Image: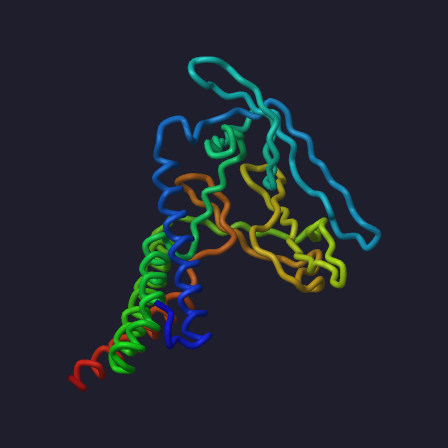
Amino acid sequence: MFEGMTMQMIFLVVIGAVLLVTGTTSFRRGIRLKKPNVIKDGKVIRSKHVQKQDEKGFFVQNYYELRVAYEQSGHRNEKTVKSIDEYREGDTIRLLSEVDRGGVLRVYDDNYSVFGSWVLIGSGILIIFLPFIRQRYGDEYTSAILALLFLLIGIALILVYIRDKRRDTEEIEAEIEGVLKWQPERKRKWTTPSASYYPIIGFMAGGEKKSMRSRYNSSMAGSYKIGRKIVLYRDKTTGRILERGPRVSMLAGGIVLILFACVGIYSTFAIF
């Protein structure tokens, strides 16, 4: 099957396989989340803020230990879960039951991924076939496959922009209050595991001061300056706090990729 293929071509197949597996995993997860009792509402009955700093002032622990009450099979249950977002007594939160982990409960974070499962699956399939198409049919057909890949990603970027643009949101002024340093505990023999730095963000919501740990991080310690003002977005429909609004760069990138794809498709058909 791989006879006559170079290492670069095999590397492309591996990348495609990774994207395909990631996409199918995401697709199965989406189906599982639609099943009854997988996502349920819970009520916070106790909240404890756990913090710990190192000698340089970085947080090495910063989370909320929540005691939540929820109903399951008609019975009231209580469970302790961890959250990177602040919740207070009486708040309603969404809980996810991890069926593949023995029903473990955790706070449900419905962050949207940039690319949906269908984009990852489609991209994976195209990349997997790319080396075989080139080996069997030559560069002309390879250009057509690349054009389809650009077209797929370009459409996905534009759809993401449209989705974010349609949200009914309001801007919230926020401030970086600290930085969490996360580093794997397992150390290798010759190297030190690289650290990731997450900003801790404070903001006002519903007339109350709250905080959250960012979903985004940097490998550079100085990327987030304490006291720096930033903007968050509150979804008026769901009340969810978003770190990023609609990005024109996604729209522009999507248009550029579609134009490249159109040129590639035209060039391919012009040859034939």
